Length: 288
Image (cartoon, rainbow, N blue to C red):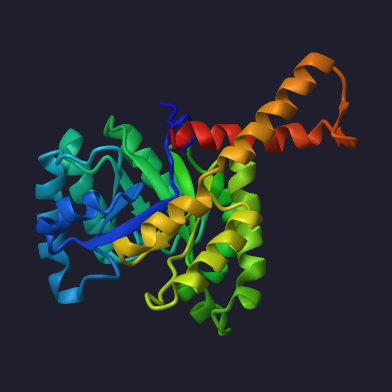
């Protein structure tokens, strides 16, 4: 069962969470315009309410609610915890009525992803997977994690948990190594790399600056904590008309020249640049 084409078919410029205890918020989350709507039964839920959140979430996803173009994902608890195993067992028991995609938090090894993928295989489910890299172990093994299953669509960078695990501050400078390593792992596995949400709603300029830095690093999207952030994220992570036109011009030049380099506007452009231009056109196609 090969799910590897999923990453090439969807825009993942933004995601937004809604708590699993409040399924009535789902239409509002979809209306936000986020590319990914994630129903959270992990961090957003008090331990005493986990079972209720699981029941409510599975009841919601069983109805296949109208989500438009949004990708619907459920963030379960870590399968290294009893609650995470309960979540996974319930998802599998739900069969085709279960969530179309799962977000796996605090992934620490490739074996973890492979085990989940194997259980989904045995159940005959098409469920896709997203993995969050947010621990020292996860960062160390992110290359192997990215290659652990064709069900994987994206790696998410969890700076808050990672900085806590590492005992460092959560700043761009301290997290740059982690971001860079995860982006490389995602690229090596053909997955999307998606950055952590910006948590200061009053600093939209700061969010845009960090999103632009993330894009330059190789991320294709970034999380949001409020709908008002999404338009800016989509602007940052969507290729501009000028970028698309430039990319098309370079691709056409290489097609005509049939050589390893071309000269455009007096600048020598070598063939490795072609892949970068193809990526721009691929992203443009994803966002329509």
